[in-house]
Image (cartoon, rainbow, N blue to C red; front, top):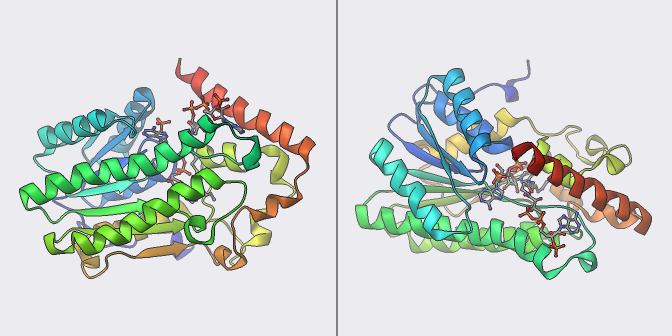
Length: 298
Ligand code: HXC
Ligand code: NAP
């Protein structure tokens, strides 16, 4: 087995820490949560769907023996965020870390979007990130806790990219918040960093960003210098390092983990080749996937 698929930090690296992971019930959030638990952290996972969170919490507890608290939260609502913090303190006594991982995204020509379609993505990614960070920052400063924030970004936060414009606007805002607050809150011992992952297979991203119509035509393996997509453990390794005290001297940084994909510039700009007819099919596939997800919930 290749080394990058192996856990990297030493045992107990996160013992004594409680970390909130937004969107921790699925995809990369779940993989990071699993590794934080293996390293001894308590983990609070939150998102909109309780059944997804509860299933994930059970699975993660069984797999790691760690303590996982699932709490429903729409990150666009400050009252629900404050409830997550209150529940976390009630369960674990304090909170040391926050991973802003929740996101909404889908590919589309921008001129096809309604105002609401832009808002829905920007509100989850940008508003959700600054609301959650503000809630934790106030709590940490008041309680003299040297907290750590990790924002899950994208490489198009600074290159920009067509066909994912709402996400690009929002991720860029979250990235500049990371750097601004790293300076402002440095005096409280609070650190903020980001990771910009390249493509890491998850159902959430693949349903919305690489629908069947595109999968054969634009294979990642051909576009990424490393010749492969990312492995969840290698992202979890970097995330755990940035959440741990081993990275105490790193703040305001965004680390790219993408096998060199960013060097081509504009992660989704290859979609220039997609025709109008194909966009009709793609939009239907993405909306069907979202509908299927909602139906599975009801
Ligand atoms: C055009 C679309 C659309 C599409 C939705 N809309 N899909 N417009 N093309 N393909 C429009 C709808 O018509 C509606 O506008 C508006 O968006 C809101 O849609 P809803 O389905 O009602 O919203 P909601 O149920 O809140 O769902 C939010 C969502 C959905 C963002 C649209 O995809 C979701 O729940 N996503 C969560 C998970 C996720 O996205 N994970 C991927 C993260 S990956 P109107 O005006 O018609 O009502 C990621 C990776 C980046 O960020 C880099 C990868 C390499
Ligand atoms: P995912 O599994 O779809 O994760 C998105 C999570 O966000 C879900 O758990 C979802 O849970 C949650 N979420 C959505 N709207 C929310 C809201 N309003 N309030 C609270 N939570 C909400 O996709 P993923 O690929 O793992 O993405 C995780 C992160 O990695 C995202 O920030 C994404 O931008 C970033 N990223 C991923 C890739 C990749 O290739 N996978 C590449 C670059 C960056 P609910 O539906 O239950 O709310």
